[in-house]
Image (cartoon, rainbow, N blue to C red):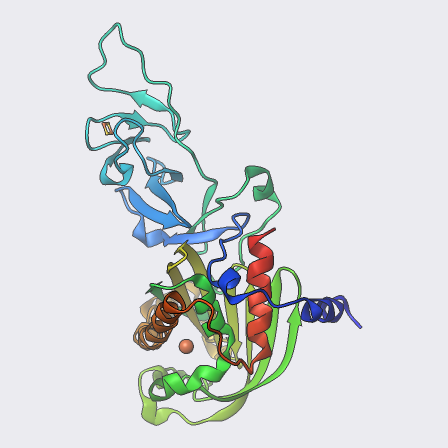
Length: 359
Ligand code: FES
Ligand SMILES: [Fe+2]
């Protein structure tokens, strides 16, 4: 028996936390969270919220991203209303300027007798990789040990990416349960995402859950024209495939057959609000002739098809958001109510959320 199975057994005997614990669970701050797409941050500051913390992102002259508390210490207004001046962030109200360490380095109307205020804004470890800006809100010594979720498809020439944001007025537990419970294909029938899932196996540890389903997919990307299945339902037909979903706390990854990889990157905002990014990758691995063509041409093909599945993703998200916001409303109205649950993956997800929130 391998370590994963051992760990699964031990975890499956642990009690499932109460539903109130799960639905109000805070995030474990000692992870990297995706707070914005790289393309969202241009030459103006950008305000984001990660689990109740208002954070301002800005780029310095070299393009490097910095993350500070989004609060001017003078009158407590948001610095994200301001502007970037060289390598400094300037508050739009009285023009105080801050450097990337959070120190106030200029007050434009300071007299010769006055000294700069001795205030320092909180800073956050931040990095820009794989198309996203990531923040580590936890204790800094752990930054080195905890790695970003790897998304190797992002820069790979053989994958066409599509991205859509998710903004849902619901706790993040509703979103991850939605993503891990593949029995909700009924909701997406008209968008033909997948069909007839049967849960085969669950593996779990204190950091992840893998759920393996047998299922059927409407898509098979094996000829160059078959990419058009993404937009033309008439070209689709059901074929058996495997559907593997993983909760890699705090994010999610899915593999549908040989052709699709999907990620959901989480940025929980509060107990009743979640932002996330859904990334969909269509594989071009089956097209061996394409791989022999010049890199510039392959890049052109990949970049031209960027976001080709965005409409489909947005449609799926809209349907899911309706359900999750209903669930959140129902929880607010009757927090003690818990329905019967037939998918054992859900209990595992709830345990992991509770464990992580208290670790
Ligand atoms: S409120 Fe920011 S400079 Fe006055
Ligand atoms: Fe869904």
